[in-house]
Image 1 (tube, rainbow, N blue to C red):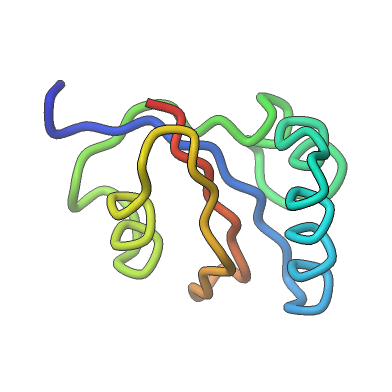
Image 2: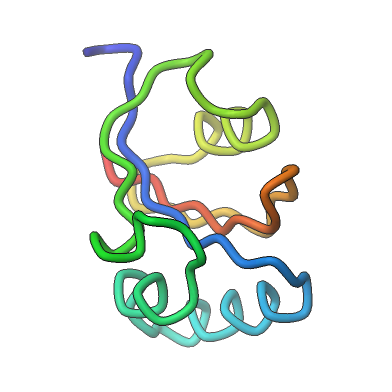
Length: 91
């Protein structure tokens, strides 16, 4: 478990929307509520929670950003083939 982390994310298709959501987060809005409202993947029902994962599980840009975060920290925009992610390190 030591080399696993738990993250949540918000995934959107457009960079402009991702920037808008990031601004709301920076103003103190709830990550989970924004994930439920905006995210386009199945994790939205869990407030963006992806659970625990280890290296080699996620696409490279996502993984690199996620593992660089400290607990409680929120990333900037991370572009992958799925769209734009905003990642929050939970544990």
